[in-house]
Image 1 (tube, rainbow, N blue to C red):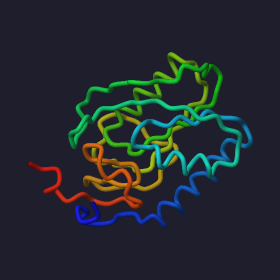
Image 2: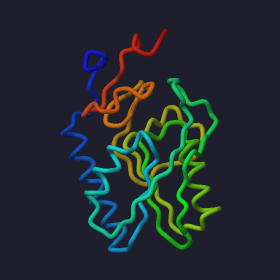
Image 3: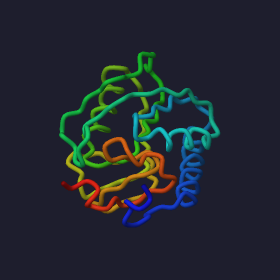
Length: 180
């Protein structure tokens, strides 16, 4: 797997430091209030678990499974919400955690649903990576780990065809690994 990586963008140590800083920022902003921290599966699971442990405020955890990629390298534009929280979010603060903010369609769809259908009063977003160059929806994350150029990244939860998620760093996948 490591041989498939053209360049390491963010080392495990870089990621750890940034996740800790994000946890402190979220903790300060919550100021002791309880929040529901919602992971968007599958890509955010590693980031989410490290982030939740770095938040020093009362939190409940929940999960949603939203997908727009399938096994391809670019979003299909169709957002599939396979799993969504069943609990009552009315009047709650919700922090939605995702691996990458790319086109913005998935995060926008999830945030709107949490507000409109589930009645959360305060919805915040936290993403590990922000790929601004591909944005097609007007959405910005409240908390961002790292900005990233328009390159194909894998590792630390990010994948290509469900592979490379277990890399401890984030790297650029060699084009020959996904182009046929």
